Image (cartoon, rainbow, N blue to C red; front, side, top):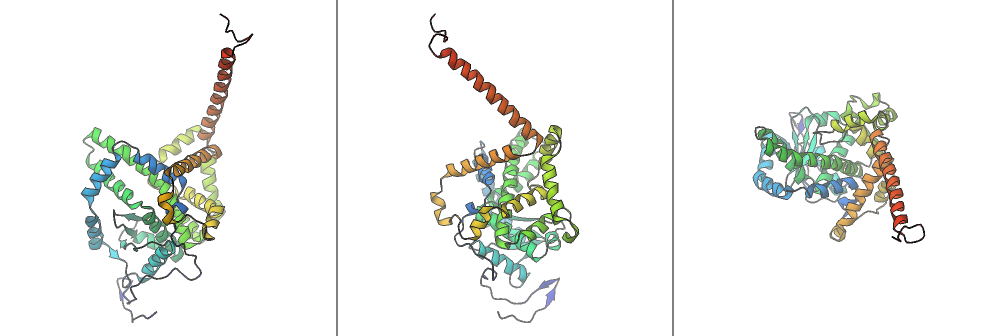
Length: 365
């Protein structure tokens, strides 16, 4: 590749690079025509189906879409952030194009770097989503970790999540402005709670997309550990970090389970140790290996994919999580349900015995 002599300005290399899309990295597997169904967590799609069923949701979405506008978002970041290009953050531009090529996403979304010490990244927008990554995130991760982050956000774009993320941000701002109007604020908060529940599931989905782009589970684990507080990932014990997730999910009593539920209030992202464990479990499973082998749902077949199957898969996912969870509250509810089911079955048997005609059936009045 031909490069011109470079100069440095505010830490940004302004070398001139060809402006065509770059191929996926050598040695990395590409996934032509991959459908987002290949990596989406079943609970993600199930939560989105439930979200759309909330009364008034579609009306709010249409209203906000008209109020926010695509141009407003793009103009804001164009004026306040650095747009990644062959001349600005060229290495990040290469990574963006490589991730887009890996997941077969066209057109490649614009990526902006904003000045913010908080490590965060997001995909927002309506018809043409953009990706925004903070300077805090750039300082936190290494290059392979950044590839995982960028791939994660490209996954949000491919899944069509950006429109709901944009809606969530707008509603949070609107709820803050409507504190003086309790009825209106509470109706909006209902949708915010549902959006947050869905968004936590969508983060699990796009962690998988990030892994498909990086194809490096260790790099993904370093990112999650860094988000949890690891200043130097080499100073932490990987097994110990994942053990924290197991302890969180299995230890304590019912009171602790209630506290854990309360801790999720207002959170749009799953907790770092828990999402790390979830992704590592998926990376070690058969689904990830099948995708790498080229066996995955195709985008061209999406129109023929029945929604009922997605809802069914989501229900099965929640059921499996519920029945296999070590959480004391889940165990208690499961036990109560089992006892109630047994009692209900016994009562039903007695009713059938009473109703059945015969010597002991009591039907000869």
